[in-house]
Length: 275
Image (tube, rainbow, N blue to C red; front, side):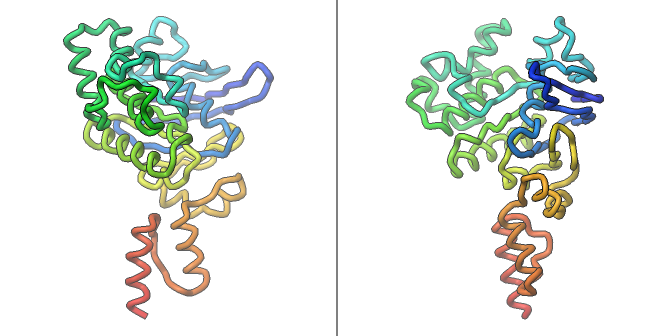
C-alpha cells in the first residue's frame, strides 16, 4: 500500500533529516515509528502523503508517486494526517462543520457528507458534541475531532504525527484506544509517530529512527529486548519492561515477556506463588 525506496530528504539548511530509507507498509498494519527529538521521524511522516517531497528516492501510495502533482489530491484522500496540536487543524466554529470541511473540499455530495460526518463523530465518541464550539472542548476532545475530520474523508491510511504529545496520560490512552479500534474494526492502516514507548507496545511493528535512518524494524517484543541499544540512541523501554528486566537481573522473579503493568503484575504474582 505504501512504499518508500531509497528516500532521503534535506532541508534548505543542508541538514539531512531522512537518509536513504526504504520501507514497505501493508494494508491494515498498525505501526509505531519511534525516535528521539530530531531523529527524523516527523519529517518521515510528512513524506508519506506529499506534504514534503523526497530530495531523492520515491514514495508511492497505492502505486501513486507523491511527486506527481496530478495525483497529490488522490494521495491525500488515501493518507490522512493528524498532527500534534489539534488547534492547527480546526478551521470552523462548530464541530459538525469542522468535520465536514474535508469532504466538502473533495466535492462530496451533501447527503453523503452528512452520513460521513455522523459516522466519523460516532467512531470517535463525539456525536453528542456535534453542535458544540471546538474551542470549548478539552485537548483530548479536540484531537478526537481532528481524527473525525480525517475519517470523514475515508482514508485508507491514518498517520498520527505525535498526535498525543500535548495530552495528559488519560487523553493519550483514549486516543490510542480510538485508533486501535479503527484499525481493528475498519481495517484502517495506522502509522503512529511517537516518543512514548508505551504507545508502541500494542502495535504490530515498531520502527526505530535514529539520525534519519531506520535502525530497527521488528515486533515490539523483539525491539524492546534490545534495551541497551535503545538507550544508546536516547530512547528507553516501557516502564514495565524495565521493571521486568530489573526483577530478573536481581533474581527476584522471571516474568517472561510481560510488556504492560497488567501482564507484569499477573506474572509476578504467579512467579512469587511458585516460590
